Image (cartoon, rainbow, N blue to C red; front, side):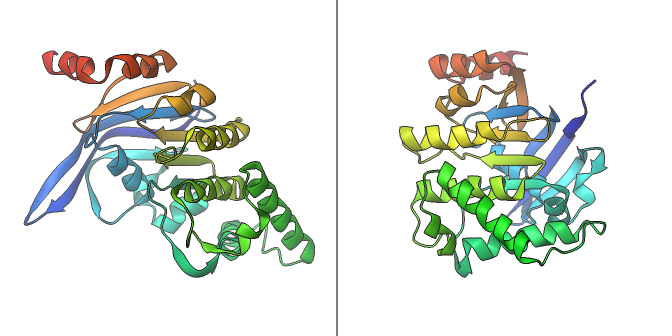
Length: 264
């Protein structure tokens, strides 16, 4: 049986709604084996982004029941920075702008923080490490068809929606996380940008790269060829199949699944 990168069992999550708690995730069960790419699709308001934010530890969301295992460890017991250091990465649907911090400075410090979390490796301060880091960042930007001087720009400041999404991919390529959760990484991208982003994600495929991709559009999936497609609605995973499910959803929409689920 393959090792599970993410193992989510009966996850229930609520959010504050005035004086009351509103339940959004109503018992999510989802297993993502190491080295696989899984996709979550579903209508608006189904809880997809809530799941992504909860996995990363956003304080806005309260876990009321269930468990999440990250390579066998209790993810929900970890602080946000611990999740990041363990190798979990969230690519935002709406990446934020950070004035005063360049992309290179941000990624260098993030990388050093990850290294320092591994005592046996120590902190790399020699010029060769800096040179290797710069080379890796420039290579990532080049693969995404972005100018090298983008590394000296303030993080996402003045960038277009498509550029911000490409910067998220560049961060993955530099930091080499174990598991990436991508919240609509393809939203707002034109056909050419979608292809570039998809090709960059495909280039990261391998036994040590696991991805959970949230999307509304099957177009990017044709480039990625995911191992599994899951459909979420009303805070639950309703069904899971292969790539053929995404194609069926493109042709028929979600009503047939919702009707089938409501009838069961």
